[in-house]
Length: 94
Image (cartoon, rainbow, N blue to C red; front, side):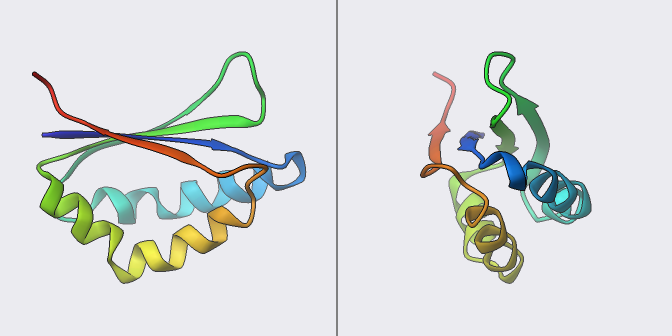
């Protein structure tokens, strides 16, 4: 299994846009083959920082989603809201 964490810091005026987009697309992302869990978290010390936490069956299926039409539609809309470049980690349990 792959744990995927993405840290995103938003421009304040775009936070609501992002939250609406996430709410609208969460089910579509979760329904992608291999997605076992998908959550959104907000940093308790920084109102502008959010994290997505997702669990995927394997890296192949994660990458299939990252190359999908759905991701290609969502990511540019999300990216334009950023205050700085997102950071992402793919982790496996040892």
